[in-house]
Length: 445
Image 1 (cartoon, rainbow, N blue to C red):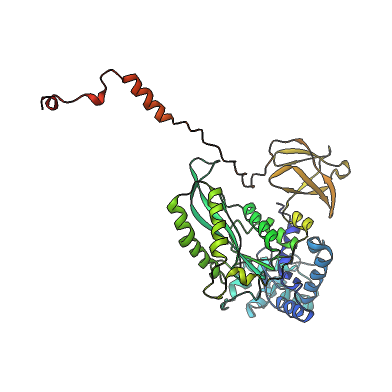
Image 2: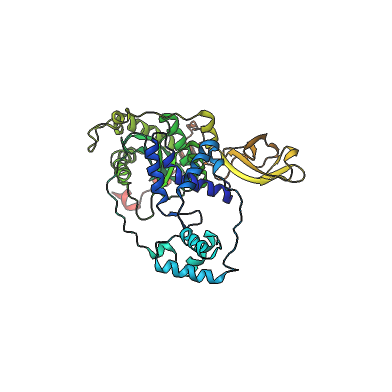
């Protein structure tokens, strides 16, 4: 996945405006949300706090509606002035921050511009203040409190999690591997939207479960996850941004709103895993078959103690929002950037590919399925320019893609140790075997 700062900035901007993009909102509700977002401080892509104006948020919303994620890419600009030419302004900025710790870097920048006619980069100012121990997040105490929360309707918010399970035999690993259950639950109905046991905890595995859940139940408004490696990568952020899903990560050490997920995990451990381990688990395929049967026959149809309805019945009132098939396919492609060489080729993941000669010297975007590196799309400036032509393929699957399941092997029925025992007994027939020897005192008896 590309680590381009432009793409990261676009994803961060989408994260801010995602709530206001919901088609269920009226103009008044959307205006209220935008004003609230404009009145709050947000951690930027570099981790520093920022405050975004109402006009800027409205401009980003219009850009996303017109051009999708590409509309949120930044345009290059330059700031006049700076702390190197005006070091005295940094001292004044520090005094302004100490006087009122709630002042944001953007606000202090505007104050300095109004007072001295010099604009300092907000990012530079935040970095300089942080070096002096004057970061806004460190000076302000977080006194927020959180109450009980439930989504107002089905598919408004999905909860994603990974449950660590037992050791299971795995064809591509010696011995066994620790099975991990990737699951997605609807916050309102408590319906287990989709779940699958995997042999590894990768971001692609989480994407596969989300893709299957969307195919079965349509698009959610919000995907709420923890900060684990399976859900914190830019690949998942891009998938959600392309599909118009608001991706929300719980605050580290303050996972408010995840109580429902923890209770479900306990039910799975006590009522499914306990019985599965009792009878034994032969493979991941068998574990998944039994789990899906248990979900459909018990978990999703039992009456929930809090809602007094079964998850399936409560979720039936959902208004399904289907995804466009082409957009859904594009959303789960991975991306990487490469510059085309003078010979019209690019190298990627140990492979060599031929590119359209018209793109020589240009930086292109490669979009691909990590499970198949022989078919890679070429994009440049928002337009597709065909596919890469493989020249030298040494790797067909991306290293971060989960290994494909190996088909079950029919048992041969050969009992090697039994054959050895039979051969041994045949060889010793008619002669004195060691087990036939008896001590002399036993013979006298």
